[in-house]
Image (cartoon, rainbow, N blue to C red; front, side, top):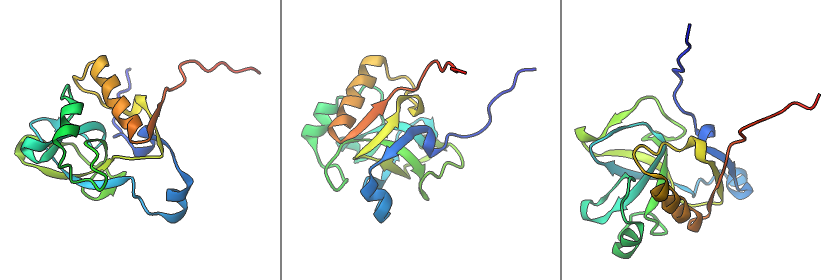
Length: 159
């Protein structure tokens, strides 16, 4: 009988390392609560988002022009970043009780938008973003000091 996974993604599926200063001081200055809009039904962890100045909100990243978003500016984030990754619902980082239908209206969500943080590409939920656009997004995240690691594919015991 097949077994279907029913557990929701957790924060540790995405974030693999956080700099010591944030952990020691519990300041969470890499995270922010933002307005997310659009038309999709999405989860709360691992979704890439981009600031859309014309709509005054973050939206799910698919193939939007990151350079144009940087040029347009007006991002509400403290450092002006225009891309981020959802890491929780309106209760904060790590909360992921249910999916949200963005077509029902804009929602408040928690995003990771600057580092020093290491994320796992396996924890990202890319939807319909193609490989080229994924690479552009991850390059923009690298500029914000968020690095990506690949998951190990084969582990061979040596005993």
